[in-house]
Length: 378
Image (tube, rainbow, N blue to C red; front, top):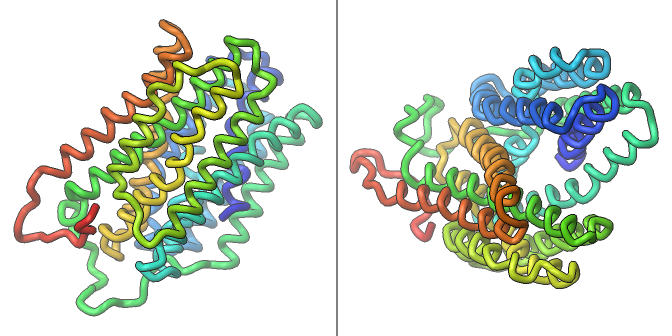
């Protein structure tokens, strides 16, 4: 799954560079295609998760692998208008490596050890983001766009083939009292699960907003050259948090982790220069990044019935992508109409609003006839 996620972290920056430099379009046009792919991924994740539940891994991965490979191989030969038109369906056919990895871990790892497993998975995600975008930029600046995007398509197809070949388990062995009948949506998409999905969306809103505000702050003070170092330290802090979260016997609830993550980023703009001070004050909030994401995944794996776990993991994937899609324009608007310092405040407060909606939704009483197998402490 680490290999499967690498091309996914490259494709955004590579498509942007191709549209801007290869097709001579602006960043807005590139952003439109990127938003279409992200929207397609968000729409496709729960649908593909449901297909995983119904048809198994291999047919779905084969279809997605073929579709994604064809799109990226054809991309450098298509005019911009066609790229924009097929962005959403191409995103829908992307192999959902994130939700698929979480679904496999839910089967392979006992419930008592899932905190450590999901923390390790989140650490793996951070590692791909430290490698993927930089590798994509290096490839686009060193080779021709046609060759680079074709190679990316081959990489997508190769990793999909590896997943198909390994065929990891995505379904639990039959449990006592659990039938293969698919439970109704209302019986499992309850308050606790909706709260968890909103917390996941709020977390990604905070993270993408923080990254955007960091870039804006560094650029405004002429320190754009140290961006790579600052982002690397942010990722390292998240990895450290993930290690601690996975190692402890009992961690903080997901709601508390989310509140701390958001609150700690609000005042960061007060110390946005010099650059090394900004880097230091960003460490506490980033330490909570991996633990918060791992905690939401752990909760989804426990709440969702085994028969619909793929769809539930897909809904979580869609929630995080919607958080990403909302965070960039909202925080960008705040920066454009004020300053980068207010961008940090907008990232934290916006995440709090989304997460608070989830926590309030959780307090709505559930029907007594359908008790939810959720964690009492969460």
